[in-house]
Length: 129
Image (cartoon, rainbow, N blue to C red; front, side, top):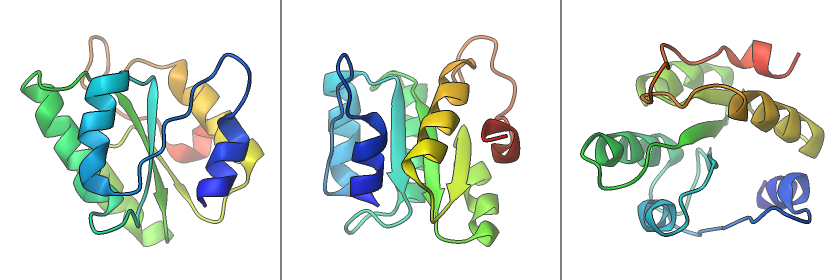
């Protein structure tokens, strides 16, 4: 999955920061202030849902910037958890580089969840149509 994400976003003018462990995401967001965080359900010893929740809680306390979150889910049934974690969007694996780019493009065109003007996450089906 990591190679698919890298292939989708490594390009001139873009920076991709990768972390191996879920607990390293908060520090990476604080250091790099990314436009988008893509989380897999399986990130080392801390899953993507837990990381998304941590990001939202820390952003609410102004410890990290509010950032868009795209969760890569193992199964459709995990969508409920993604929404509870306040993810901006989710995709069910397997996904290819093109699907990731389209989803990211549409997501980046929208307000950040929890930021000014953001009311609710866009349904993932609308992201990749």
